[in-house]
Image 1: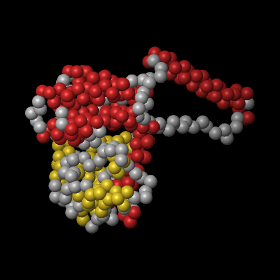
Image 2: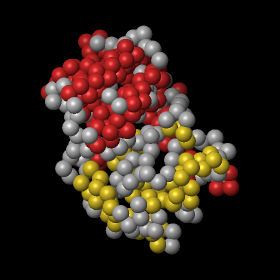
Image 3: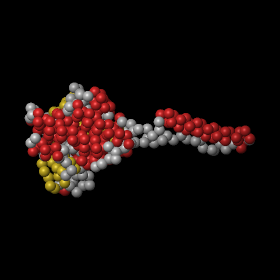
Length: 365
């Protein structure tokens, strides 16, 4: 195995590994065997870390990256799929215990990049496609829960009966003594409870939008230009995944007819205001991308981030996001005055769209 393969595997740079594999489509049996063993080692490390009592998750962050599962596609066999199945089952168990787990939430999305041959694994991936579809294990059994509901209802009826008879006593004793000013009891519904995972995600996405479009340009320092991101690729490592290839044959085309580059952010919406990030697409000025369209996207929205000169740089803002554990997340170093307002606006795309800009207003045709 070449030094590049070893270095990238050690650094968990599976995107680079996949590119190397695709550049050498005819791998030798010895190299394929070594890659397969490395993949098994990574899955075994994840299995150990995810088995209670949990160990350091910082060493297995690759389980929430789509590129890891794309790498596994190139080396998959029966042993790889069995090992992946055990890892995914552990992630499901972890989520049932702590539904705020970011690692689990991202892993459920990222694993869709793996194309399983094993029917049981394929069903497991499909069933856990989004973390919001997984329900935590009930504290009570169904039978005990029914008893509890019955007891609560019975107690409620008894209390209402006592209130009713106490209210009727003035009529039974002396109707003239009844106080008509006694206020009637009002029913107040319980406020809707939102899982902590999603309330935290709302704060993080809002903060990420501030990071992208509300920084002070005068504070920019240590700027490094990024020019290797191509149209259709995901420029981010924070929150957003690369689009899942081959998931659907149904696409919509989005064309950038502005004079700026743009990043199209695809989000699922929950509880009306909370965004659950899905995919991001870089679209150069004058270019077009194909966005996968699914029947489950009814509650999906899109946000447009416009600017020029994609780069990584520092500012004094507290809204800071890191990629590769050391590099500040990418963003445009040149913005137009309306970038923030446009980014914060939710758009719905159901058919092919041509995006243009006129007098600072984004127009979609």
